[in-house]
Length: 92
Image (cartoon, helix red, strand yellow):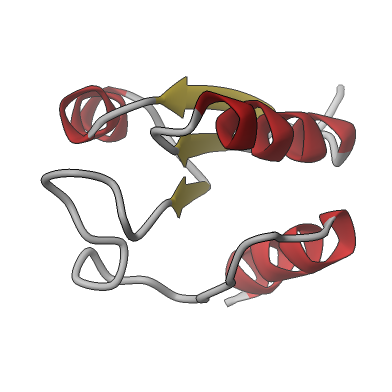
């Protein structure tokens, strides 16, 4: 039986950045959801069983730092840095 695929929610209002982060996580074997704003993000957080939320700290109406950030990365973020940060959070 295959292992359950962890789901990540990418919350990013810049479409190009959102798709880049989403593709990085797909390549790492994760199921990825995307949200462009705080309303859709909160809805997904409440409805889905998420392993990790990747949240832009500059998105309107919500702050990644105030929302309980476990890891902070600055853009531009490389594939190995993002993958390593997500794996670190999953191990915690």
